[in-house]
Image 1: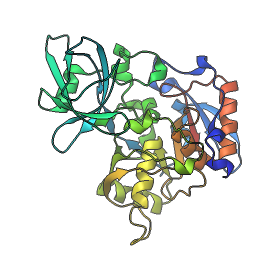
Image 2: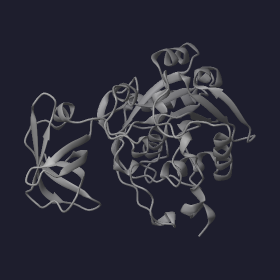
Image 3: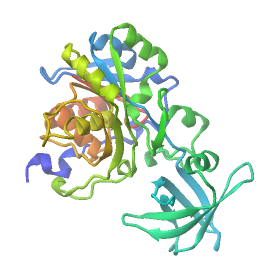
Amino acid sequence: MSREDQLSSYDYPLPEELIAKVPLATRDASRLMVLDRRTHAIAHHTIRELPDLLETGDCLVLNNTRVLPARLFGIRTATGGKWEGLYLGTTATGLWRLIGQTRGYLRTNETITINNDAGETLLLKLIEKEADGVSQYEASTGDALESLQRFGTVPLPPYMDRKVATEADWERYQTTYAQHPGSVAAPTAGLHFTPELLDRCRQRGIRRAEVTLHVGIGTFRPVTVENLAEHRMHSEWCELSSKTATYLTEARAEGGRIVAVGTTSLRTLESAYHANDSTEAPGFREWRSETNLFIRPPYKFGSTDVLLTNFHLPKSTLLMLIAAFGGLDFVLEAYRIAIAERYRFFSYGDAMLIL
């Protein structure tokens, strides 16, 4: 087993105080580490300098998914015991797919009672248990997305040390360009962008395209095998429209670089770019499907030239993707420098631009 195939190769010591548990006062106040893959140079900038670090003709690719208020808190109707759940989607028959936590054993046909501040009640009845802790529930209300707006809260990552979102979280744990509801976690590289920063990019001649990937439970699942060849990614739904495919093709034909904003945009681009390799040459094309693409060294990229991303958890599939793009040793050295320079890590943290 090669070093790149070993989970332990993607570990690093991170001081607790460098984990960004609350957002900065403004989105574009974050620091930006710039990594040059050709020279292995590392420079320190800010997100506000991004338009000057890119080139006229480059194309930003943004993930326009919207985070759902997918975290639910309730009680077991029969016992009064506390229950906490995370909404993952619905089945073809309209049942809700949830991961739930409670003390003891939740039995089939047992119900969960969820109340909101408006005095409304949502009942969830356990119908069937799947694998990996996921279960199917029958909801007492109709439309799932509308019900989540009434009964749910922002599904913050565990390392933020708070289950209930603050008023700031409701606004900041969402990109300013979010459109399509479906994610249980934010595409965090996009959290840095203000409308003004995007406008400055436009004025600089930097293009903008959008894709959609709904971030799923895989974001919360740790890798549990030392041999990465044995790890299986959870599938996530994504889409690259015909309009975006045409735009990206034109941008690259004119010499522009494709700049993926975040790992979710990059996974969508790569999934679509190589979707029909067996029958067609790789390229940008309209595509919508589930993807379980696991990107790790020595993966070869075809769709993306530049990557903007945050600093990710040790031993995570996101860090493995970054290592594939930037080189394992170079990325680990950048992380060592980021820690020494007191960069802020994870969802509300600082960013790196890999050229």
